[in-house]
Amino acid sequence: MPLLKKSGQNLQVQKWVAGISVLLLAVKGIAYYFTGSVAILTDALESIVNVAAGFIGLYSLYVAAKPRDKDHPYGHGKAEFLSAAVEGTLIGVAGTVILYEAVQHIIHPVELKKIDTGIWLVGATAVVNYIMGYVCVQKGKKNNSLALEASGKHLQSDTYSTLGIIAGLILLYFTNYYWIDSAVAIFFGAFIIYTGYQIIRQSIAGIMDEADEQLLGKMVDVVNRARRENWVDLHNLRVIKYGSVLHLDCHLTVPWYLNVHESHEEVEALSAIARKEFGESVEMFVHSDGCMPFQCAICEKQDCQARQHDFVKQISWTLENILQDKKHRFEEYDKDYNKVEA
Image (tube, rainbow, N blue to C red; front, side, top):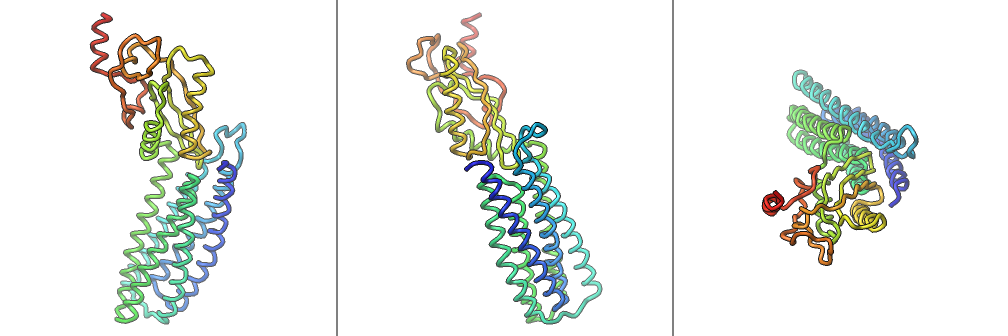
């Protein structure tokens, strides 16, 4: 799918998230007004964060969807990581406020009213939140959008906390133990803080270009399965994320006697495999190297007229060796080869 189309889809989904968050906040506010429940206040406070985060995410996706320019040659995708960091921070602040209010209600208990009405109102918001969260997470994963994934995970965590709050309110309704209200709020306040931490951690990893081992591992599996005869070696693999765009760099070793066009064909074949697996939002920059005599031992090309040594063993590319910035060797053979040369 073209990158601009993906960005447009992300932006459209986030518009719905921002709009619906405003409506859900109003419903939860009404529920709190009827009941006076601190647990429902917990849900309402998180919804305030949902609204703020929804509009922050909307703006970040708008920025990320902008085409490249001379000042941003790699695009504006990093804006998504900043958005996710802000959203995670807001979630953490909301969780802290929730814990404070819950403790205050334990110290100074408040009589609750119309609990059944609150249960129905909050239950309706849980259903809507879950549906929106699921759509956001799935679309975010498909389009490699951290901002959209963060919004979806936030909505889903809101759904889970709402269900817990409803369970606590039902128990309170039948037992009249009012401390249950504060206990539920404390538990989910802590859960919300943890969710915020996870989002912040992931956004910092994107900003700092931290290696994504899961993505790299998937890339290693793909190239091993699709390995071509002229791909003598692959090393120095790097992946950098710019929002929904992935930049992959690597060195591909091919037979030294291939001309420029033939070498380019091998590079294009590798790039096509990456695009097929990860989508059109992948940009791959491949540096081609000519093979060296010591690599004959790991090259299984059948009709190579320039072969100087027998093929010994193919080296399987792994996450460990494919990240190295050096050509691979079959170590046992290489020791013997060096002795002969000496």
